[in-house]
Image (cartoon, rainbow, N blue to C red):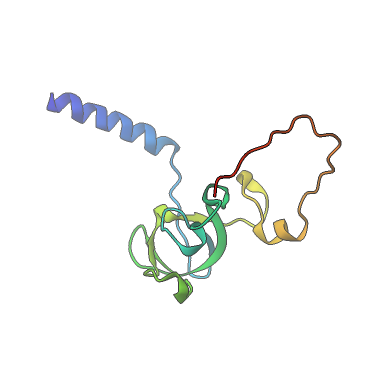
Length: 127
């Protein structure tokens, strides 16, 4: 049974490593921080599920360990500035890989004009 488990682990390791591209950051790089996994102040309150998972840019200050980086975070967050790579995502200013440019997103939001209301529903709110 141990041999079968070891064989399965090696098989999955080979599959994962064949498609995995390791991510590294240099000091000065811009990264997005997952505000939901860290329970940051911006991820709390009404409409929680509608907030962006990655919504602000932060600067990488230094690499502390193999998968750990020191990030320039505001003191209002109240968390330690050393974060695992699990909570970070590289920021690309262009539209490669489906990543949106957050700076330009707020400048030129897409606007639509409503042509017709197809269906409506009234909801009672209990106070």
